[in-house]
Length: 474
Ligand SMILES: [Zn+2]
Image (cartoon, rainbow, N blue to C red):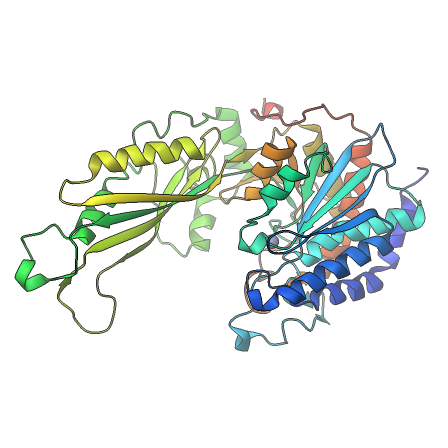
């Protein structure tokens, strides 16, 4: 390749057409989670496949799954160069409450520097940043600087129920050196950020069963152990007074971070007061000895998401419910294994269940934490790409949330992932009047162009997943 300039110029010069194409993409009502939109979702997948073909990608295929199709395409012409797997999703969140939308959610409109519409940012606009970067190469240079495989799914907003099986089944087809996904926000317009670590997740439901039927609290109150009370007593034993999770062995696999890493986090990460302001919380809470940012990133957490039981209606009803339940969610950190944590949780619950009631535990959604070594070449490529695309180097951040697909790529394909987000915190994803900041669309396309170029210069290790401490900090 002689110069990247024509590729970048093609992208800049064709922005109006790119926005038109993105508008066509947004017009599909691809609400994957709602069965009513099955045909629209399939139509969206077919349209995307056609668009990839027009872009110049090869072996374009729409794979059927049990629910919504996966769109695949590739371009593999450089045996000695790395292969990049581009992941994205074309399904979108439901639009309710519809009356809060200023414009119809599936009639995209450009106003000021934004394009409005469901999916504009999450994830059609961000996914398209990659597609348009590919187009910019293919229409000017007639080639890509590396090999590329695209995997665009239609079930992300419902938890990707068929993705693991798909990755497993097509392991050979999907063989790659690194995955990239753009499905998240950066810190602000001026401040790109590169997420290199996320927490894992394990959700459990705890059921407490008392007696056979709901009872009158006058006739039986004081004589039987109320399951709601027993549940509360159990829940109260999940944390100790210092904010630590009280399950024996829970912290045994938790990675201990060096002072240098913690200093970097304190210097560049969000401040505790900002996190609390976002939470509209007057005071923080949690594990002693760790900052608020650390508590949400390098330390695990256990949250009670909901409690169900007894009478919830208007007025009074003197009842002792027959059973009660709670939904709980663990956020896990390196190197905790969600299956091990489930075992420890079950053992502990068994131990603290009073003999007046019985308990049942159902677990679901197992995702390990994800962490990429900051010295890993693919992360360096990401940093370089943002510096070029946005004109400023990104801040490296950890986030407390979970992207299950990252552990799937690690598990099924044994590859690291780079998270190149182009969204903004106020894109209103999942909410009415979703939008995408068009300058970020442009910068995102440029960032994707630079990312591919940077990767083409790297010789990636065979199994490039490497976990470790941030050595650059020393
Ligand atoms: Zn998304």
